Length: 143
Image 1 (tube, rainbow, N blue to C red):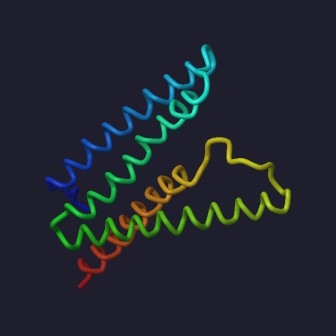
Image 2: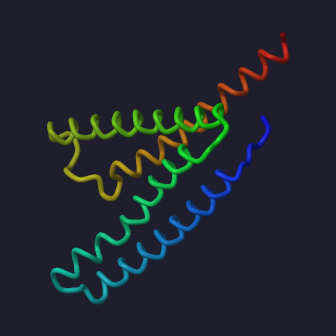
């Protein structure tokens, strides 16, 4: 399978890199701050929310790719990947909620919230796209 690159993919890669870099900086900075010099209210709420903003930026980045990609086939693959990610996330979080409701697991996800599982689902969707493209290429080679 050939690698695909378009202007939209290059913008996506830059945006994703920026969001993830900012996320890492904020997670470590806020972790250090809250351990060594916890800020008073209401600043603690504002500062605790800061690392979530780049996560929202990643979601926005994925959605911008869907809007900006001009090739309909690749856009369909990206949409399928996002739908698989959404289904994966909803499945995991629903099961986890029921496990919590019936006291099978302790309350809280300990940092593994919905965004984490949605991002994992993007990986599952990418693998599914790769498998189905590989199968299609093999079928085309036999024809």
